[in-house]
Image 1 (spheres, rainbow, N blue to C red):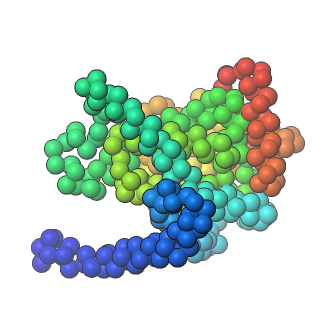
Image 2: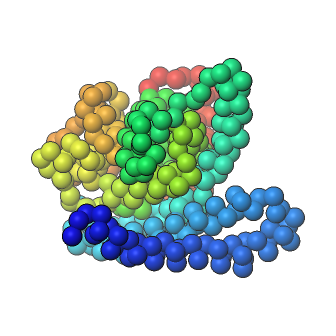
Image 3: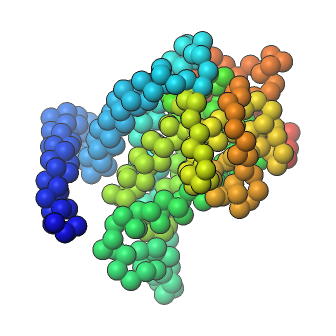
Length: 334
């Protein structure tokens, strides 16, 4: 059997869950969302709301997959004992908010009119915005290749954003919410201040639109990235080892980034900033591949610095820290 024949044979297996997902999206929109929009006089938001239902369902599937698979793995092969379940419950709130709260969709929707307006101005000047799909002939007919190119380009942007989150005091004041978790689990990936998440998601969405990423590719990029980052934050004694350790960020590699006195306070303002691919840390000399599973958190927590226990306390303290950093007009590395 040829590869083409094999693909044709198994394609119905893929089509069935995709079709059922579409059915669920339409049912939820028509039965719940559309009537609500009509009652509120907001039918002009119907298209955006339909996309929001898709993100909501994707988020539900993600959370269910994480809870079942990652939860079981953490119980079997933990990097450290789980002692602070209250801290983990707060991270679950962050996960539900970020993965069901549709922040990436909001950023994508808000920046679309801006990009369209900019593109119109450039077209008036006879200048076209860069579009990766047009760099290689026939790439539009190879969606997987286009997806991989987008993933690499946007991961480089994520690396740069991550360096910025650690380099500027006002931004670190927000990003410290993420690093203040002493009991890191797969839920910790989404433990981010809302303003920090909005800035990052906005930059990500703006860049994605600027290089020609379509809505379908954008959903796939966000989901793939989020699932891989959840694995990286997991309380797992896992290290890929060998060549693969330098190809894809492992739980061990990323845990060193969260380690007290190493990941943030170490040389070069920290190490292991890569989100998906360690190649960026290798190129910019911020990689630390030493094995080990060190305690996580921020050094000043050991001397009593308060980063908050609950969601609202963490949000408020971060804003207060950011205000203090801006008031001092001090933009040196944190």
